[in-house]
Image (cartoon, rainbow over all chains, first blue to last red; front, top):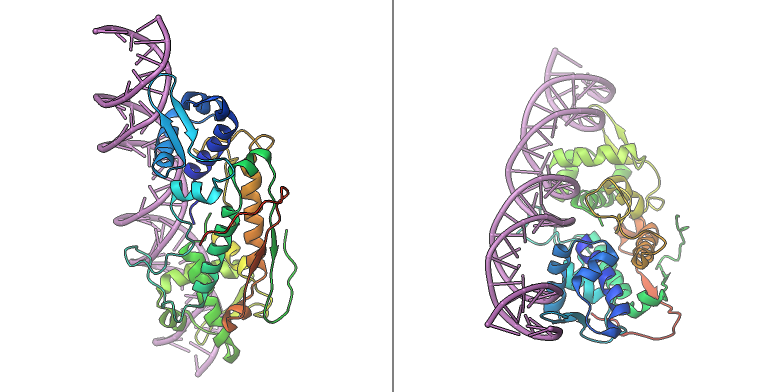
Length: 156
Length: 156
DNA sequence: GTAATCCTTACTAACTTTGTCAAGATTAAT
DNA sequence: ATTAATCTTGACAAAGTTAGTAAGGATTAC
């Protein structure tokens, strides 16, 4: 999988931006000072966020960035997608990589597992918005059902 | 995060082993042929699985590996842990890495998110066993509750 | 004793991540 | 118009990780 610093930094910066940008555009220098990130790196990140339509930029002096939509309409999933690409646990069927391809979708049982896990993560991250984060109001619970009805204790 | 080929190969090999090892120990050459993996790589993998107490080895001619416990007592989580280390999405507080540490647990909101995600993944993976995989009988459902009561549509 | 197996360690090429750097383009304020 | 503040773009490099190969050794069944 791939939630890298780029994704995480970007998300943090956006939460900060979400809190600050009522007053108008926020420039990267301020963000970088508040969040202790390098401006250069933030520039890369906001470039991607802009291309993904998550923020808007205002150029020139007194410029900066604002959210392109409401803070409760921007999900963590969108942000991570923009910065790190789609969440993917197993790309064992991509013939371009060094990784030997597995025995194929029809016979490789574990593919179903990884795909299910990807979907679950995606669901979780799509359900949490910048506003949730800013207000620290979010929460997830997992309910599992197993066909054989057996239960395992969940570890730590 | 880090579910790598090592983890995935290992899991696949274990499911295969689980199916075959009723008859006695299974050697790596057979496993490697069945699953199209290199023996050398499998050796690395099974070494770790052995150290983690997931398989037992029988040395010498006619030797091989068997599961160290019942197939329904070995979880995916254990396997991934043994091969790839603990699941960790954000290690932004590890001072050894180049990654700049975030503003700290007390103030960095997104940490809570990543920690929650880690826990959820861990729970899911702890609840699925080799037997589930072998029989392809597993399934997960996610139930979310949000304190503000608002709902987002889940995107594909 | 020999062949089949596991055991251990070392290594390396490919790839990814995490930034840094430098030279622009645009705009507000004066 | 000039200047300073900002975003824009693309190149690059050091650090780190992953995926796999290789080689030789130890143990055991026969």
